[in-house]
Image (cartoon, rainbow, N blue to C red; front, side, top):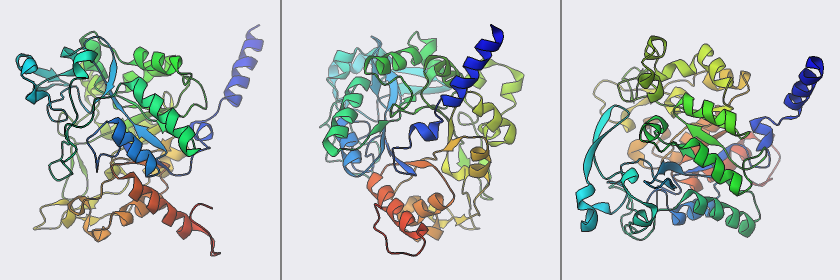
Length: 386
């Protein structure tokens, strides 16, 4: 009987699709609309997701947080002070408070203090002052269910698969206040028929424990996000708290985990560990191509590129996909070697072999991908979509 069971398990493993195989119907590399079309419209709105899709995004990315009554909604953080007009609602003035999230004290309004009905009275605003502000106050805060419905609807409209790429935001904190995210996320996918192999879904998190819980609940591909605080002048990464390590490692109190930083996840041992519970990594892009700051330099546009690291190759050797973040168009965010043209940054990462990337400007990412395909052709005249 044991031999029979082992044979069944091995056969299932051989038949189970890899993350790459399960998503082979999408172009490669994939373009992920980061928070929708955050370069143009307020983060995490149905209008923003729709715009990203119209610009060619293959996936749209909702960051998931919980309301007081247990509904998953799309906000970048539980603190909605900077991303909604909550401060303009006198009926909610008394709910402003100070909370500690992942070890950092914050003051503002938090989704866990609002019911979904109350959240629906708020409107999204653009958190970046240098991005368009004329759409502030126009769009409601969407639920996870509404985002999935939009992806399905637009898949039919444009006759192409459109996927979702949800993230569990601050899962340890949500669990500590009695609003765990993982089962609600999976149940929502179950309800719409997307908790299955080949469904157009990736699930991501910065916290390994959240992904390990999800690994027991879903066959969908999981992605370990990898952060850092900043880039040092010599191009090495800075791990100042709270961006030093996944917060669940800090909360564990275990000396072994407290001795690690996010950087551990990019070592050979770390990648081996990730491969035991996830299907890909989502590193901050500086792990793949970093840069130095020359003497006298003060900002990103003064920096000079370093050669690409071998992270992509080492991840691929372990069967892990690589989806770095976040790509943006503004000139002051671009390293000097890119000449103020964001296309050049995308091309550098496509050439480095990434399997996809997160962009606030999906249209630029798609255009750069077309150029990459043309550049990679064998010399014959081809069309960008061939």
